[in-house]
Image (cartoon, rainbow, N blue to C red; front, side, top):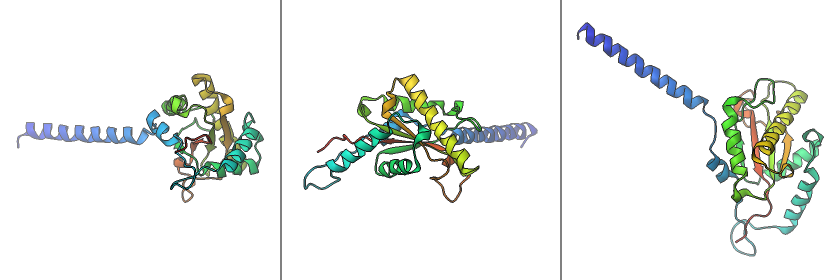
Length: 213
């Protein structure tokens, strides 16, 4: 092999490695989610009535849920008691939901520029006719680093930031968005409390008016 061939062979290998590394970094840093994915996750699941197979509607339970949700509408996030936060979590456990890895500036409730596309996708999804009339819980979560009181307050401020953005930029009704903060009490990865996956915003469709079959 000539010196010329060796030189350009080395150049080709170097360029290929650089491109591979760039692609990997781009993929690793892209945690934004599409509007369609959010819509699919939050669409109400059909319910059934009578003796047919499948999940069945319970009018009494639905009425209780609606009554409770009305007590937390228009409440400031920090005013929710521990019991109310836990009740919201209990109801949300069986509802359509999605976890969004929305990053915030360090030690701040300001949305990081890299996560703005995810918040915009959320705004478009919640504005879609398929979700019209639903009530949504916007829950803030932190990782396990830091004290409980600090993380609780931070998670509440971050949930409030998302609600404010959605109301101001997408005209959503603030009464349809219930914000709650859980601090570090509900880690997504309990084995790795410091993992960034724990720093997330969970959106839950609490609608009790799902279509029946």
